[in-house]
Every structure is written in structure tokens, then in C-alpha cells.
Image (cartoon, rainbow, N blue to C red):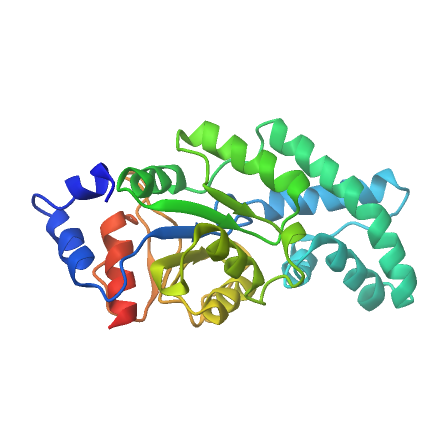
Length: 280
């Protein structure tokens, strides 16, 4: 057992963590994170802006409003999102829509990467503190996201450097699997690479499709509600909060299936207790 996790067995509030670690049917080993909306609020001011820039750069007059994007974001995968928009809102033939999407999506992706490299995509409130605390407690961390390699790796590297936490042990993207969320493929591949089972992790998500994917994987899910999600759409998550919380911006609990005692911020102790209650 890693030294830091052993150290958490002693003293005061840490006793909750020690008790949980000793009495679970399966010990919690890792926390697996989504990226978009979960680690960083990328959608409204990142992806949406990049889509609109790609349209303009290629001579299209189309511009996705915040209201329209709130609907389109329900479709996972940027190329699929463009194709859906063209067929449903612009009456394109499906094949033509796919061709345009295939051409536009790499342009949009590069524009989004430029935004990342410019340091314009910050982490969500409290997420850096939370990841550091999870790693310092001896738990492994991984990423499972529908995003593509071209922007996911630069973003998670930027977040790790800015947030002062260790790089994620495993990063699985939409390039690595056949089926995107809400299918369980991404989480399953992350678990395969970690050498773990679904009941040995907690999956962290922010959206309806993400929660559905986590539930289909067969493990517990913590939802940190994204800006385009409703609380109702996150049904199935074991705990739903509005942020990771920090000392100056406490979180709010939106749904609490197991009646957990939640403080002002997410902590390793809380995640361990969530995992224990899920197995009970």
C-alpha cells in the first residue's frame, strides 16, 4: 500500500478513510475522470467558439449560439455534432453532411488546441486541489474521454502543469475505442489499462451521456454538474454536486443517493465513503 495512503489511516477525520479502506468488499484503487466539462469548462468558451471560428474560416455564415449548442452538445464527438447540425438544422443530405463534418472537424480541433496552448482553458473550481489530494492519498488517476488525441493530450498536460499534480497514469480518448459515450467502451478501456475492475474505481462525470456510460460500466459515479447539464439528466449518479469546492467557493449538493455527509469540498475521504456505500 502506498505510504501516503497508509498515513491517512491515523488521526481525527482520517479515521473515516481508514475504516472504509479496511472494510470494503473491494478496495478503491483509482479515480477515472472525464475531461470536457469535468476537468475544465471547455464547452461554451472553448469548443463552441472553435466550431464557430472553423465555420467562418471556411466561408460558412453559421454560428452556434449558446442556446443551440446546449442542444447540440448532447451528441458526442465533434464530427458527429457538425453532421447532426447540418442534417437537422440545414437540411443537408446525410452523406454530404458527413463529408463537410470530416473536412471541418480537424480545422476546429486545431483552433481549439491553439486556445489550450494559449492558456485560455482553466480547470474547474477546486479540481486541482481535488486531484492533488487524491494522488497524495495514494490513489491512481486516469482519464476516459470522447475527445480526440489531438487536443486531449495537450489539455491534460496543460492542466497537470498548471494544477501542480502528477500526470494521469492512463489517458483514453475517442481515438482508442469504437463506440463513444454513452457506451461504456472508454471507461472499460481505461480499466483494462489500469488492470482494475469497475468496482475498484469511482468515475467522475459532468453530463448525461457520461453518467450513462459510467453506470453501464458497472461502477460508482460522482457527477460534478457541467454548465450544459441539468440535475435531472444526471440521474444514475451516486452523488451530484455543482463543483469540486474550495475554501472560498464551497460546493452545493444537488443529489445524494446514499445520504453522504458532504462538506464544503470534495475530498478523498468522501470518495472512499461513496465507494463503500455503493457496495453496501
